[in-house]
Image (tube, rainbow, N blue to C red; front, top):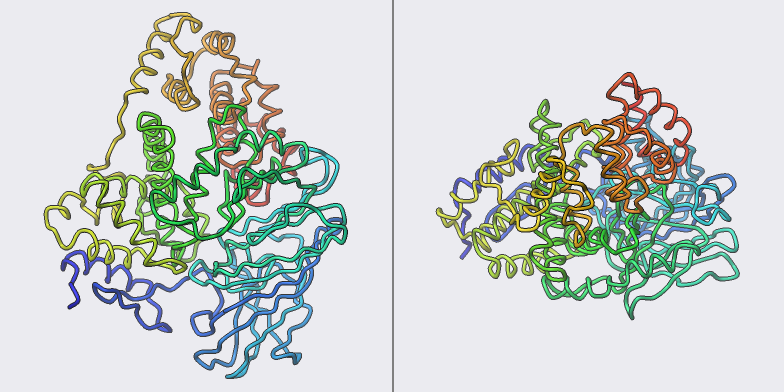
Length: 625
């Protein structure tokens, strides 16, 4: 007997799903009802008609020309017997196309903003193999080519990819949507003396030929395709985890990340086995635009987490958690992005709590809540962008990469946990990950699954959760949970003492972590005086800190206060950090006033080449204001 979801919740789920329902796919049947399958508006492919089963990639990386060239062989199943295969491309030059080993005439559409160009390939009803010879263009949005001087060691060039959200199409002709999964193998030729790594089985040392072979036998979407090439070394942490980095960074990175094996164990104890074999981390050169990227088997991460005290490695817990939420169970479309990031933020904090305790993770929850408040304020002119279920039709999916899916999503899950109890919610999540392993899911499908397997139509629980206000409503619902303030209450008291002229050296700060320092600085008055800034700096050496989180906040405060003694270190910071999380607030603060805007433009012109194309796009817009 199929148990029906509560009438109100099912109506919301189905009606919301119908807004983007596909006419080319039959509805997916869940054990609680029928929910239309969402249409991915950010792929130009027809992967809903042709199954993209497997990719055999054979490419060469030319570091001098800054170009990838080769061929992509797709094994397909033309299940609906269509006459044309359509794939996504972005700034790719197509050299030739073969279908079942025979050369065919293809068509490449004019480029569409954000989406690129559809590649049309004629296929037969029984066609199974499509091989595309191609090379990348100068505007490939996924690729950052680093000259030697832009790396840490400054001896060899470096390449890395960032395929999320829809940038895989700029280095591989593919069906580029999160709901489209495939397996792959790859042969990658790189200059001798360099190592190639991918989101697959990886070598642990360089070879003499410069040719490397990779295999990913588990199905993944295109946004999880990843490649890095450089003078990279490896050091194991334990039998299934390890760290890759440039030669001059690997020892530091290994020390900082030696707890990743324990993280994997903690995650497994929460929600079941890690299913990807190895879990390794690649610490990239400074230009990486984001904190981390959850490429299967090989997390890419920013060197800004190497604080020297292991205080910023919760980022790795986040990327590891994606091995369940995101990589194992994936949002079907970018409108459902919170299904990846909200779950992962929640899971990250559960891992951290298991390893470091509740009072520690309470600080992460509170800082996240503050970020959510700030984000909602920033989006007050577009309140629909604060819904969990996004509407990104006709827009760049990166428009959805705000704190909303992360923080509103994770706080929604925390609310469910508190409402039904942790044991019940943990059992539900473990079952959810297992039931949907290596598949995709929409928001509407999740809501049906949530009711069928946890809420069971309980009116009292539904009234407490107010699900519609979270998923299809703006802002922060009134029932948003808040973390305990045990440690931050003490921080707030010390800040009050400082503002009442107690010398900074006499404040009780000796046991503080990064998170306490962030709370201390975040809650300062909008603009301290240069004298107050100087007193803090003299006591705590904020200007010369090696902690990127604290440094960025301090430099923003310095610009605001006109504390020019920090400007030299701020320039060094901007020259060596590529993470958008840090660049946008700092350049943005400078651009707020006519006095500081020229400094922002001068520094950006000087260091723009160090930043990833995605960071450049954001900052170019900021500088044009």
